[in-house]
Image 1 (tube, helix red, strand yellow):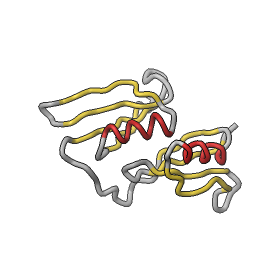
Image 2 (tube, rainbow, N blue to C red):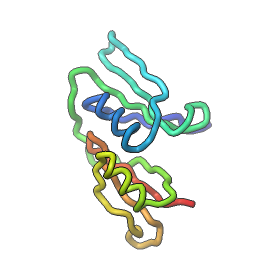
Image 3 (cartoon, rainbow, N blue to C red):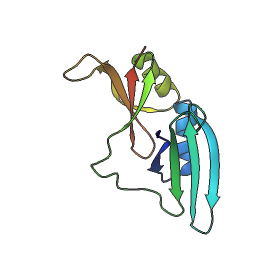
Image 4 (cartoon, helix red, strand yellow):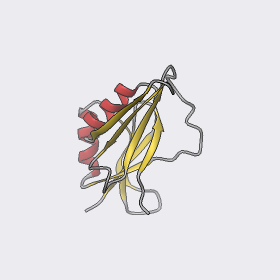
Length: 127
C-alpha cells in the first residue's frame, strides 16, 4: 500500500491552483470535469502520481467556501531552509501565518503558511 492523495474542497479552483503552483511551486498533474456531478478536480504535486503523494483539489460547483472544522490539522512540505521558503512564498503573494523557527518543546525548525481557503501548510526544514 501507499498514500495516493489528500483531497481538499476549495471555493475557487483557479485561485487554489494558482496558490499551489505559483506560490508553493507544485505542478498541475491532471484536471477532470464531472458535469453530471457538478464538480471539478485538479491534482497538484511535486512529482508524478505513480511515485508521489499529491493533493486533489475538489471544487463543487456553486460552493464558494467551507467550514474547515476543528479536526483538520495541516499538510506538510519538506524544505531545505524554512526562513528562505517563507520569504519566497511571501514574494509570490502567499500568507505566512507562523514565521520559521523551532517548534514548541523541540528543535525542529518549521513555519506555517495558509492557502486561499484557510488550509494550513507546514514547512518543515529538512536536509
